[in-house]
Image (cartoon, rainbow, N blue to C red; front, side, top):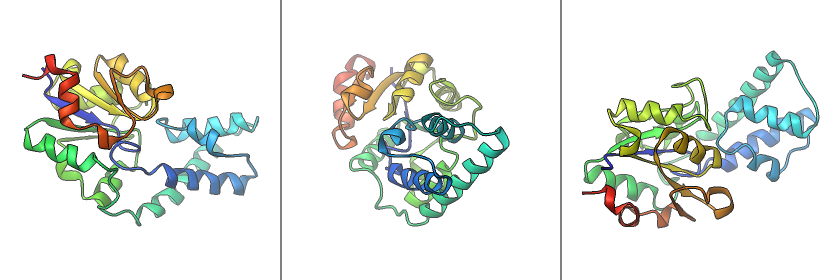
Amino acid sequence: MIKGFIFDLDGVITDTAELHYEAWKSLADEMGWKFDRDVNDKLRGISRMDSIKVILDHNKTALEESKLEELATKKNDIYVASLDHMTPEDYLPGAKELLTHLRAEGFSVALGSASKNAIKVLQQLNANGYFDVIGDGNSVSKSKPAPDIFLYGSEKMSLQPDECIVFEDAESGIDAAKAGGFHSVGIGPEDRLGHADLRFDTMAEATLFEVKAHFKELFS
């Protein structure tokens, strides 16, 4: 039976994607690198260090690890400064309603995000009260598509993976959910998330009613 839900943050609860894009673009412009929205799409769901390596590969260049870390930190500083402008109005449509509904029905809820800034984002949204467990980029060493962040969440909720549904907007996130033995809901287009157990174009469509209807044998 389903007893818990695990949510990615960016693209599921809120959309910080544009803030990430602007931060990477600022760094790329400063470094003289080519960077556009197609490259940015490849960064969805992966860690900061992996992201900068994707950008370097695109530009057919390489840097020492220490320089990579310095630049990744610089990008993060730009991004974190932009988070100060987030407010509780910045939930994606449908996200707050779903979290409220899950709370009302007594489900356990965890965050499973690759972001090391997840706690700051939740504070800006005033969302901490919706989560029993917060798993972020500081919680595990292996990022998605490894299932570690979701396994961390289920373990902290004292649940088995097959008792949890993961909500993700990234291909690597659905891969991670599958690798860990979780049920999965994809938020976004078919070409990116067609391998999820259930998919919606937007969070607004992903109501608890619809989720229960699809996984009906897993809800009592």
